[in-house]
Length: 218
Image (cartoon, rainbow, N blue to C red; front, side):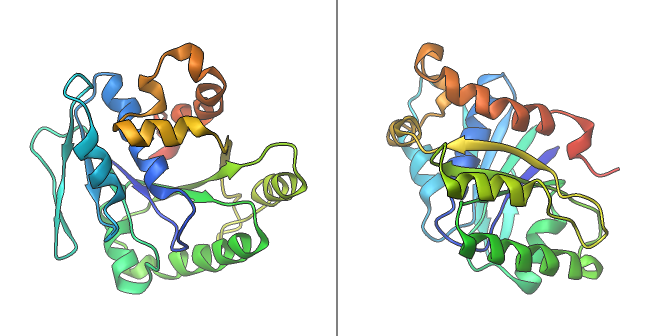
């Protein structure tokens, strides 16, 4: 089973938007997808509740006492996480995941918080019994702004504690398409292509990475 964790301990960075669109994409491609909503705000669960019957099926992976009950025959599990996740709880989620996608907002506060988080994640190696591949996505970016340029430059240079470069995958713009999709329980990949052409193009680097062996532990 493929397990994809969407995580950043800082709130408001678009974790649920990323998680639901990843789930919607793979479901629309015919994969058996389950979505685990570990966030008390339950945004991903609300999205699932609004999902129309005509859309590709995505199962709910129930979460009880921090443990995920994955539906049988699941091919891809997407995990949406809460803010302020640290220590043992962080390690528990990382332990059951192969890949972590970290959305980041274009602000100095978010950049500094991300640096501290990456250091913490790799300090927990002894609590995580298998490797996890990590990559960043710049989210809700207003294009052609100084903040966007600074974030892209930072993400392109950030290093892991091992000295290796942290993969920076893509930048996703701030657009009403994501709001409209969320209101209907859909992903942007389930709208008419002509309405979301540019957004789909921005997603392609992330989707290629998630579909490749580069996003899996060695």
